[in-house]
Length: 597
Image (cartoon, rainbow, N blue to C red; front, side):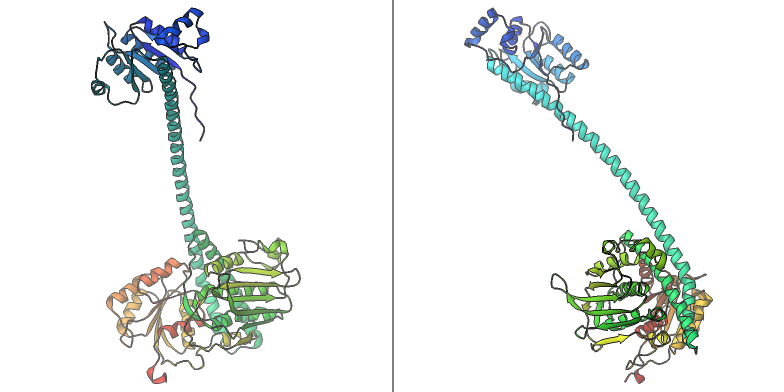
């Protein structure tokens, strides 16, 4: 804040009907050099003092013979902008106002002036003075005969006090001004924040809407291609189907990346920990790139350390997303050689156990100067990389954020033309072992086999289930056809309807074991339908609450919470795969007792 210093004000008015008193104050408060020799001689005799000390600076004295005259001078001086700092007022000044009346008027006229009551008589007691003018730190009493040193000290102290008071007022005004500016700035910032939040909300809603509109046809495309791949195809036909599927997955990744960046910017990206099998997750994820790797003649394989416990607790979806980005980049930027994925136990710098994943390729490599910025949004090693290989440049920025959320770190080691090794760590807590933790060293299947092994309908040794009745609710005919086909592959009996009203009508006519429910349908949407099912207490074939799985093109976390709040049990975001449907059936349908042994 700016330093405020008031100009010195040494103006003093003496209000006394005795002109000799005027002269006495002049002698005391005017420097000795300004007095004549005779005046100095007189001064030396004043109250027995040998000599008067010189004041540091001269005081500007003014005089009045009567109280009313003094009051008028105080008012005039303040109006003219040259106020007095001190008023010395005699108590008895006949025939006009006495000192107390004069002081009452002066204090009301000037809120800063300092007043000295100068008297030789006990005209008023201090209690009487306080009763008239109140308790004030601007009023002092000086008894006659007064001492010259005392007068000088009082004059110096009170004029300085007046200056300090002015400084306080000036600083208070400055603080008030700055506070008003700060309030205006805060108001402007708040308005800007509201506008920014509104813009972010509009952007999020737009992205969510576009995601929904793209995911719906993408679900039909990927679902049909997957079902097609399960039919009797030639190797060439299977290869073409795999290429279509891989292209669809790439498009889906772009959509997911854009949504994730939006969540990161809004601070809404959160983890959803679940128990999962690390080997299964790694295998299914790496296998996604079998087609692309085979097309380029690359060897794609992974290895899991035998010392690593495979049953883990963490966000399997986000772990898979990190791996998809790193393996996908490795395949994209490698023209010959291999991509190797290694998973092993590790400890962080604080000694906590983590899982370390390394993805090594023999691709084009990354220049040293580019390695520090490849984890930034919309960034690749250079512009030619984007033109040659495509991509949004969002993947690694999202990966870095996800790794941080998982309590880990990420890094890269690379030389141009010598390939790159990306690594990351993640804190994935050990869960209760239900699957043997043996060494897993696997080459990814050929493209001609990828769909057969990526979606096993039943795992070896897994409990069998009796044929279940499943109800599908989706207003899109292609999506209904995809789900009917996938459930047929899974060995289930399924019925499909178009909206929530038809769901309730169908449930009144027959019992089902599970419902796949789209959320946006005409006449009655999925959330309303789910609430109605729960309110009506509709049960499954075995008499328990019927499981409802949301199957929707919405991908935002808020929508998942809305589905659960409406009474749904699970949530699958479109586009769905056969493995999604198979896993959901395993989670939600009971094992047949007669076939579980």
